[in-house]
Structure formats: C-alpha cells, structure tokens
Amino acid sequence: MKRKLKRIAIITLGVLSIFVGLAGLVLPILQGWLFLAIGALLLSMYSPSLRAFIYRHTSKFPKFHVWVLKTDEWTTKVFGAPEVD
Image 1 (cartoon, rainbow, N blue to C red):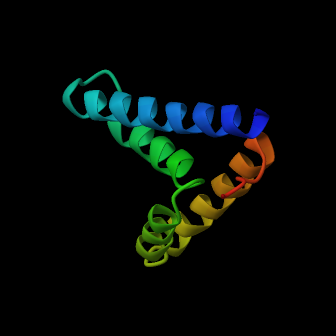
Image 2: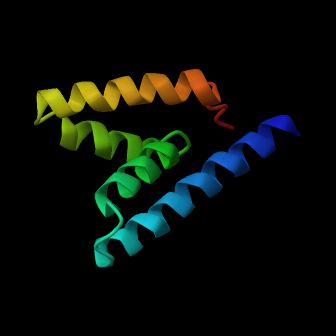
C-alpha cells in the first residue's frame, strides 16, 4: 500500500510540474522549462522509455548530462528507488 501511495504521489507531482511548465511557457512570470525538466525527471522514475530518452539526448551535452545524473541521484535519495512492477 505504501509503495502505491509513493508511486501515485511521484506521478502526480510530475504531471503537475508538467502542467505548470506548460503554463510557464506562455506566462512570462514562470520559468516553464524548469518545471518541464522537473516533471520529466520525476516521471522518468517510473518510465524507462522516458529515462532512456533523457539520457540519450543529454549525453550530447556532457555538463548538462552530469547535472541530470546528479538530480537523478538526489531524487533517488529523497524519494527512494522506484519499485518497478
């Protein structure tokens, strides 16, 4: 039960971040790309295809790829490793 709640919470935070990011692309006050990146990283915890997409496209930019790996480690430390069914 705890595993399901954690999964639902992470996916909900990811989807909300994506929606805020999309709104931020239109509104000049919000940084849309930042929320899109946060949402994508959160959703990639439970989507292997999204994770592969992020790694494949950020490996072209080594400094950005290092940042992605560090944030991936941080999210794993904060939220724990995802339990994939």
